[in-house]
Length: 289
Length: 236
Image 1 (cartoon, rainbow over the protein chains, first blue to last red):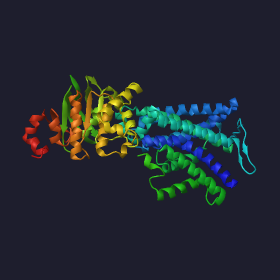
Image 2: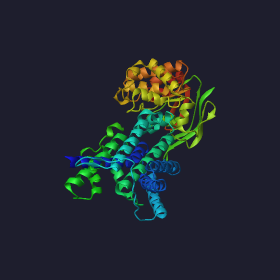
Image 3: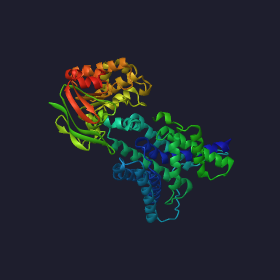
Image 4: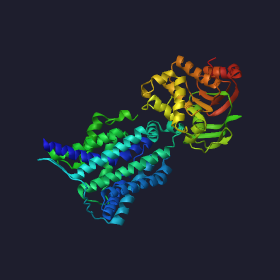
């Protein structure tokens, strides 16, 4: 029983990280119908920024805050100077731009920090939960709590603020939202600001979990992010969180109980294929349209 | 005073030209209609005025100032209300949220709340349904909501795009009566419509649009009696 609980908690930790990774790209897709793979560049960039800031300050909260701020600014700049100028082109153009940016950022990180794996050992300023057979270490608690805070913050913005209302209207009908006076560029800017800082948070969390930071660490999350976006109903924030948790749980449970009959990272796509066969519109697409 | 002046506008969808040298004027207090068959370019004119499409040539003036290069989101706050073709209410927002979106550029929450109360006074049905999702309402109710939403920014000019699309005849009459009532309260109206009979009943003046070109412009009286118009648009 505790074994199951242990695996479930582990799955929730992984799922929270996936949710933060995919959210920015899902929200952008929800509004602009473009895929932003470079969202996963923010993930690696955030991890490095977190690593260096932690080394410099020794304070994990400061490291997170600084890294989130930095990648948020990065997101703002690239949406303004890279994406907005190509938005009236066919969607393949911003997609290719995002792939190019993704590769560029990875190589930039390699140039700055070197190709080798760096360790990221963090002391969390509080203890772990331990029972006879169950251990929830402090890194896990920290990750779940921080992910919950960030996602609740997003939920608050989307449902309780004026710009959040504009975001929802824009996702439902971009053209009409414009005609009502919504400066769509501003909504998209907010989207990048939040999305990239969320991806950065996810990057730092994963680095802490696996004690490693490397330039291409965004590769697998980039592909997995696509599976989560599709499963989550192509831009539905609640659906995205649900899909991320589902994949996190399935991965952990399959790896824990069934064993490695296939690589762990392939499981997300197996889930994707199964869900698309049974429910082609995604898990929660109804609330998007 | 001219509220709207469209000068020699050409517009394209990709390579195909939708508007050819279109010029239209709407004076303050007028109710003007643009008549034309499906695909004649009526909605394209509306989108150009609203900034949702950029004309390739020509200028658009609103109350004397050139708005051709202004983004769409500035035009609502300048005093243009827009009732899009097919209503286009935000399906997953509540009635009240839809109205809030209509008043998105009003200065301050108080102004928005006041105008929402005005909209409820005008359409009590919307007040009953205030927390209902727009997609769960009937076509007629959605049309009311689309009109109420367009009134939120206190528009000087109301653009009404094909109000009859997808509505039962009785609801078409009802919607047109609402627009006519707004006109009599001082709002200038530009309405494009396929249903020429009904449009000419309310409008004072009309343009005929044929495959992207304005072919005729006259008072509604004269258009109703014009043999060509009767034959082509009034089923005579």
